[in-house]
Image (cartoon, rainbow, N blue to C red; front, side, top):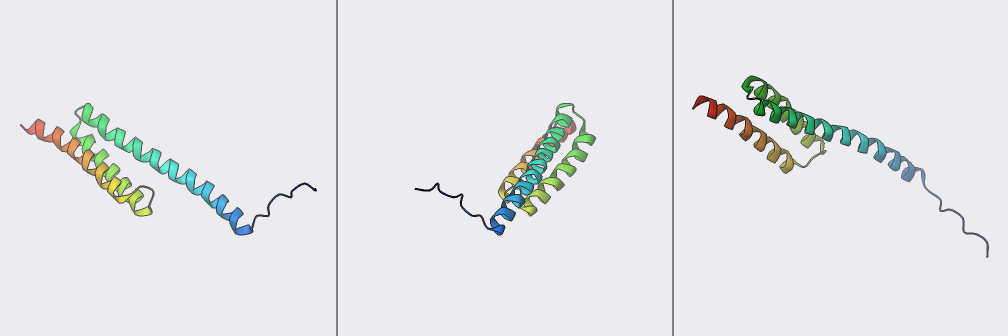
Length: 98
């Protein structure tokens, strides 16, 4: 029996594989950026820097919303992350006021 030939692959399959690789890299960098922005907020809260925490929160919320809009993260995940970060910053500012 002759050796089995390699299966043929259509152009569309090859193109989809290329697109998938690129999209994976883009999504990975976006998620990494979201984590960095979240950590920045948490660090500012830990350092008790209210002004910087508010600014960092604003940037983080914007980026999280954009990622959810693009489908990089689920919208419920985005809402949860925003809620937790906002609660963290608000707890810091309310404890200072008291």
